[in-house]
Length: 74
Image (cartoon, rainbow, N blue to C red):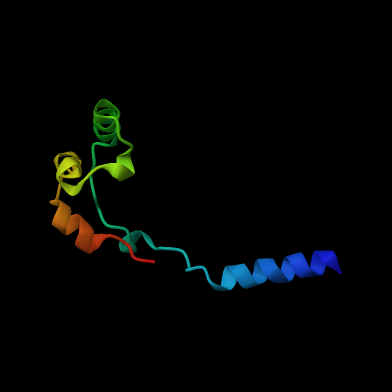
């Protein structure tokens, strides 16, 4: 009985998840990730803590505003 409850909880958790993304859904963004990580370490932050102005120089083929418009929403 306990196994069935865990399985039911698992199935319920899957219902709230979004489906897989196709390649066409993912924006073509080129970033200098190595440089962004090195910069974040240099200023004593993690990458998610960086501001828009700090991230933009590492976006190679678009501006930060374009990146925000094209990002995938859940």
